[in-house]
Length: 257
Image (cartoon, rainbow, N blue to C red):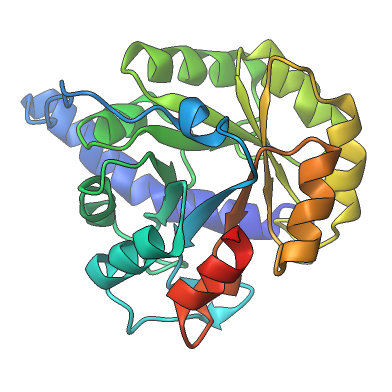
């Protein structure tokens, strides 16, 4: 059934949101981080293709990917492997993530993207209390264009870069209307959990010169990175390909050479 998986992801986040609501009522929400956050766009705009290495322990499509690799060890390996930025899964039920992992990666002073199913302003406040530099909004999760715009604006007020994930041309238009500066083209259908690289090949044709674009899902080798980089993508978010490797550091080095 269409949207069945997305509905499960959204439902799984309701408990966390209810906790945040209680904290807000009690006045116990964590305070926003006031320090400097590394700039995601600046990091991705340097010469050459940028790799955003993702800490991804599990997923609904792949099952357990690598639950033995700790966040601390992974962060060190990603730095040595040449990652330009990090993506950190924080969804617990389906991806074995945790918001605490954000701080582990942030200690390296590279931009950290919080990747989760985020659709409530309190989730932005929760993220703002960490040293993360950016957070992900998925258009297929946030269906109301006014809500998407609101979430983007709140994020920018906290100094967080909103990365808006799209899957088709209609969602690209919604992302632009929200004021997003960073567009993530996801080659994976979140309902059927299948990958089609032609999604990125088609969407990149509509790129505006003022935007920074990230290609995600299905990127496994340097040949693919070269192809999409010359088509206009600045960055590549790679999780499973790195985390499933016997040597994530060496795999990352192969992709960044």
